Length: 126
Image (cartoon, rainbow, N blue to C red; front, top):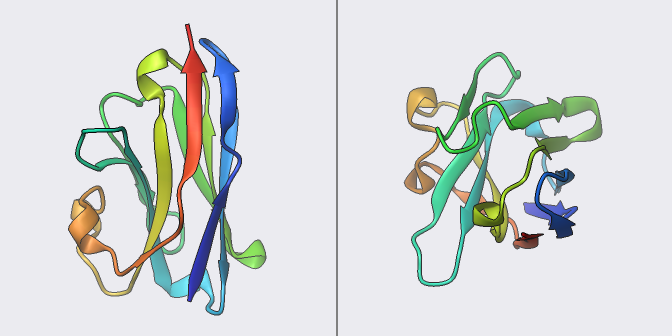
């Protein structure tokens, strides 16, 4: 079971990035997926999550209206479209997976997840 996060980079404030989380070794059909971020010296925080069929999505208040999570189970990939980026969005972003069943309403909590990918750095300059 592997998750590969990609798509990070350096962008100016107001810009956009799309992160991808590709799964290998298992099918995402039965997994909820979350995106998290962790800045130096801070705790890991939930950014967004999506249920196994994409019918439920959740967002942290800090990213609502700017970020959109989506999934393409046929490609075994989950995306995080990040628009109107701010310097405070600078962080290492991680994707994580949890197999059904799980408490969907708690999907922004890191403790819910079993599998984690490596992080991808997002840096937003002012």
